[in-house]
Amino acid sequence: MTQAQVPDLASPDPEPPLPRLEGASRLRIFTVIGIVVLFAEIAALQYTMVASAARDIAPSFPGVGANISWMVIIFGLVGAATTPIFGKMSDLWGKRLMMLIAGASFAVGTLICALTSSWALFLVGRALEAVAISAPTVAYGLFRDILPRRYIPASIGVIATGLGMSALVAPLLGGWLLDHYSWRSLFWFLLIFVAVVVPLLWLLVPETPLRTHQKLDVSGALLLATGVGFVLVYLSNGATWGWGRPTAWGWMAGGVVLLLAFIAVERRTSQPIMDLRLLFSPKVTMVLLAAMLGSIVIGVQGYSIPYMLQTPSHDQLTHLVTGQVVAASHGQLTPALVPMVHIGFNGLMAYGLGATLLGYGLHSAVFSGGTGMLAGGAAGEWARKVGPRYPLILAMATFTVSTLLYAFYAHSSWQYAVIAVVFGLGFGSFYAAAPNLIVEAVPARQQGISAGMLGVVNSLATSVGTAALTAFLAANPAKFKVTIPGVSASLTGGYNTLPGLYTDAGYRNGLLFAAGAGFIGLVVAVLMRHGRRPATGGEASG
Image (cartoon, rainbow, N blue to C red):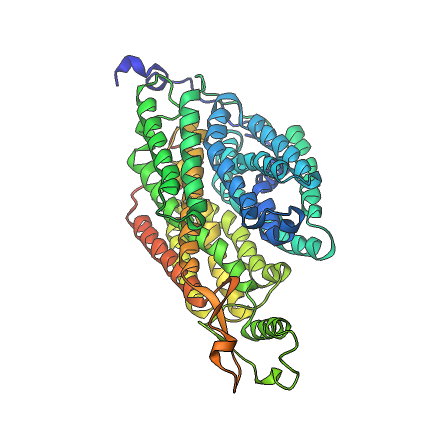
């Protein structure tokens, strides 16, 4: 690469303008922080409320069957593909502007989902909603540009953990709405929420004064978005398609080829979407590696814990299966014989508490989300005093410990609650540390795209964790066998699979895999040289 090829990156930029809220009152600053954080919670809010309602939504779209999972898959695909693009466009055209566009897209998509009876249109609505996944990524840069420096580390820590809407309100309100109204009420609530927050964002939050003066690299953007999308298609569907099938591998191979083409194109263009020298610098690379390992833990826990809690208990399963056996006997099992029916399972299912979605919120989500909400801001402030590396070490340590505790000790509601607090501490610390490490590693004019790449790594790694867990669960399906004294085994049959239920071994193996990722992440954090100085809100990185 010649000097003439990189004039926009090599030549010095004008001195960045002072933050817009320098000298503003605390009330003004905290109002801006609150509005932006509430807006950034939109994606997490909908995920907590909507993803867990898949079983309630499926009957409204006859014939969809197992494809109902695409309502979650497409959200992750589109969100991961658009996050770096929105991050770059926020560097070019303004961060508040891109957040408003994301909010408008979310509102249109939510309205479609609330009204439509067409599966295809429902997926279109979900894709439009997914653009809001970019909101936290863009918000990191907005806070860096408009807040006084001393407020930035703690405020960044609060962005991902939120102010309680996704952590506390969503699981409880979502469960209540599902218990009393149709699943469509979830989308109507989300529409009302965004209809309130978006005007507040427009009216009360100032636009960033900083702009990167270059053109959008359209070819690089398309290669990056499509490559990430192809990889996520494979990770999201590999368990269903078969991980080793050529048709499945084609998506993965195609995604890798496109990402390699992205690197090749970016090395040659005069105005790349991101300076690859910065992307592959030791500071940024180590942060992305740690983020990948931490997000694997989040992916495994985020998928496994709700299913573990909502798995029926042993007594509930026995009662349920006995009823099915009696119904299938067509009167051959008389009331006198029913007490003699013995239901045997192929493995333990001690994790199950038989909780509803509301029960999951009360037993686990409230504790992990509430702790994470408090830990995010506290860890951000801690980073301002000692550097963001220490919160990252705490995050990886608690990720590892909480995952091991879930694997071996989650057998009652109080155990779930205690472990959720431990995980919540790590969750808040992780989402305070990783973005602050990026802020301290990159110049302000590369903030949006750099945070976008962090978002891509988080999305890919979360999908890797979910895919690994899915593979472990598929290898350990729950089965039952009926035996009746005096009745031949040939008449009662062998083991029968319980759809959607898995033995403890599947969950434990997945959790141990996540614990391994957390431990490696802890080693990376301990060895990391970056982040050992107090966080400056980006002042040290220009």
